[in-house]
Length: 322
Image (cartoon, rainbow, N blue to C red; front, side):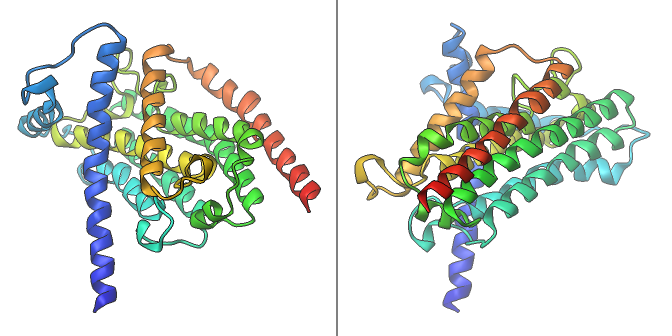
């Protein structure tokens, strides 16, 4: 019975984190972008600094009419937002935020394989949305999303493989237990490749050509309204949390603090994740959107060679140490 209660408690905590933290990132994006662009942004909802603006946005989405195109495949159209969102919930279950077994939803022995495979499922939501909308422009957006995923999945996997080689394990808690601070200088290239490839998989600016809202009106999601459209936005923010959390665990030491200050545990993990989330927002404000050919060129001619070079370097360092 205690095991059942333990599993239930972990699931409740993970679900609560999944529902709250992405909304916090969304609110932070509103405010950070407003300050960086020299504008106020929404300031009235909830009083102080417009803290309840995301709640107001949720109410607004809930009040909008749920429209399904007449020629759409209704069941696939309605299922697509859930397929895009739920993989990130499963990934959060496997990300450790502290040194004890209680600081992870579920320890997965092949943790890297699990999280990367599950994250790749999210693209099916975009493909389903584009195909089921009965809109050729939505279908083109979905196909562009799939092409972008195929291009950036490989460098992301290669960069993660470099860390697994260094640690000698594919378990996420195992990687953290093996982590040493001197890894940072020679794994920094892999970290950059992993982070950039993750941004591209999330279709975050400047890698948002498939969903360019000002040019092609959200690509595969053009026909979506109300809460279903809000679920796609929530999936994007949940993806930011997952990407930043994985980068923290794989490359920045997770719950390890500087100068041996590991006692704070999960605080270090959340702090590093928050800093990376700020970087994601900063990049959105700073860089213009890349063209489709530039997206593909960056992946195949820059990130993949860098990831392969990182693996070679990791092999050389491992041989030298042994």
